[in-house]
Amino acid sequence: MRTTIVVCFLALVAFAAARPEKYTDRFDNVNVQEVLSNRRLLSAYILCALDKGKCTNEGRELKSHIKDALENNCENCTDKQRRGARTVIAHLINHEKGFWADLTAKYDPEHKYVVKYEQELTEIKKE
Image (cartoon, rainbow, N blue to C red; front, top):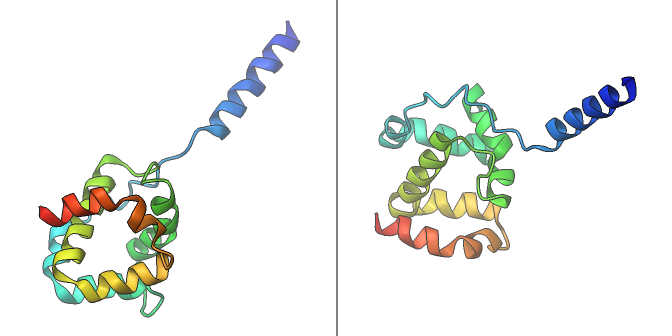
């Protein structure tokens, strides 16, 4: 009986360790539209992500997940983060081409993610 309990416990621990965790939703209340409409705020977040400026707690959290989110199609993002990412990408592609180029150069220098998500990016650009 003890062996069964131990095996079940170990299986539960292994399952919990193997399932991907979502990124923290602690900053999901950030108003993305407000940031995008305020050039000073947007610049601060972009400069943080590019390691060219100071970072707020929100900026550090965002920056720590950019590469992983690109690599796994935002698999660990909350729904709100996924929607926010689409909104931000659309804004950068359509209104901030310089920032978009800088971020792409830093986080996707080989353009493998831009190519991977080309269809989605094209759809976003049309929004």
